[in-house]
Image (tube, rainbow, N blue to C red; front, side, top):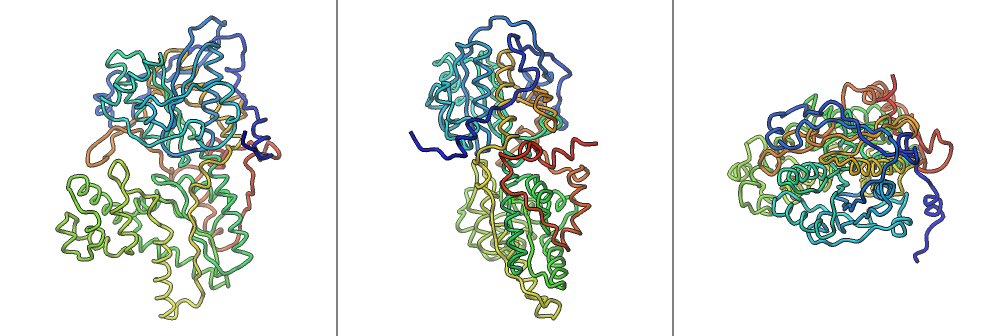
Length: 552
């Protein structure tokens, strides 16, 4: 047996709490159906694509006298990138299924969707699950990014589930993975295949949420880890007093992590992508704004500071967003030599490839390394892999150039010594915070309750997350009701609608109220390692974002 650390020992001893509805031993959990959840946009297009599951009601749970239920054979997969708490989703699912009937079985398909397609699986027993409770990572069964989007794949999933007498499948993933869960549930219903499909909301980016999904799991832990690191760098900055730290944070499609980390640490500058898009700020606008703060701090002898930037910023800058869209379309529709395109340095040649004149000019104004990343690194949808774009290096390049010009003109007499950082993988697999440990366990338990009730096409949800766990309210949310249409790989596809930072919301308002003060003064906060131990007010607290959103 592998050695384990004292921390691991303590985490194994942590016991997640259930809300009141799930703590009534000797009762049977049944459902109450409420109003249907309909998409907020593209409603007719979604209805056409999801005729079987469109208009499903929101469900809540109630307890009744315990009755004997049939055992359930259930399959589970992780899909996509890691997020802290995933193992507790499986633990909660397992315990919930055993509560329904002690003879229920849970099978884990290995390495994500690939395991479903190859029937590579293990039975998850109490003994196997025990050492993974409250642990980080997805290593119990592994994960993967294979896309399930063809009928022949769905038929293979059906065949492999049938071999194990599996009547329910739980997909633990982000918006794309849970979109797949919704499509799979629709396909099974349309073809009279008796397999339920339930999703659980996972992504550290925090963009899988809406009025009913208050946060995705892993976000709380990741923000606490990143904020600890940022706080340490803040302390280093005011100690050394000579470096500007440019810190790129996870968050491709939304700036939730950057905003939460700003609220926790009071970094000098935080760029919010949604604000950039809303105000149509060009790259030069952003550089000028940052330079203005650098100059102002320099005038007070402060040639140091902290700048936070979300990894997806480039997709929100208007001229680069257009460029990326044009690159996505022309590369999806044409057989193009990517290396040749990446190395093209002539505007006329780029226009021959299919770029507009303006996009060609924007492309050539970028550093060669960034141009290469825009063209060469593509995901399975054919889109730019924004996490591989060195946004922090792009900003350092542009800031250094602009400040050098200002120095040459006599308008800047300070020093600019930038240090680039990317905080990404550091926050994905650590042991979950108490909040995420409890939240994930309840997501799994809620999934089991929906399976027991015979539901399909739902996402597991918990509300009242800013309250003590005993007051949390489990729900089932129809996946089709969260869909919208997005352009993927050159065509319109149904996907779960991403939730962006609300510029009219309380978290952004709190940030906006303080940012000028944080820019000029050193109001740094040092959160420290607060994920697990200490007073409940610290160790069990949810994010500042969620607290602000839920308070009056």
